[in-house]
Length: 200
Image (cartoon, rainbow, N blue to C red; front, side, top):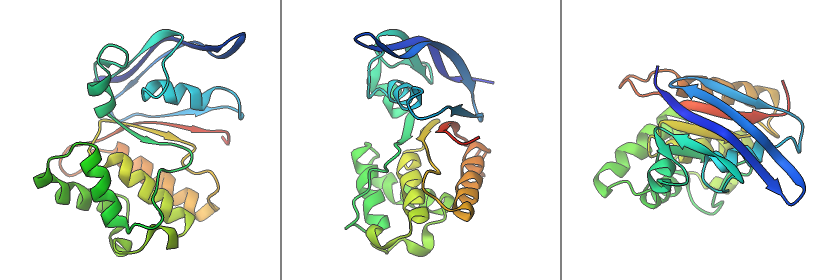
């Protein structure tokens, strides 16, 4: 299977403090891989390096064959990112927000409606498409965050603490959703997923 994520000896230092120390791994298409560790272990730092938000002190991140340092635009286009606090606009409705995100991510105007409908369908948001995001439960807001991460159909998803603060039912739903995103869809597309958690 194709290798979609490569970490090659990645380190991140802040002065004397070592946040990430020579981490190397590979993730292939359709895999779901978890970063497990307590708060402060370097999970979020590693994810920010893999998404291009933070440069490594040493090493390289390669996403879908594109080096994050030498080919950052193509590498970033290959990633859907859900940070721990989803980047939502609470005053927008779900569908309007996802169309806005699709435009920002460079989807051609003619493909946006289909891409937004597909993301809402996969994330179980069709029934709330006209609802204002600020009126949704935390579980549904997390679904909107996942939808914005997949709206441009990236091969790689990086999800930072996707179930934090959710109740047990919502956690089960989000885990099921993540598993479905990694499975081949009707069109054969599937995502490779890295997620972080401090709960085994």
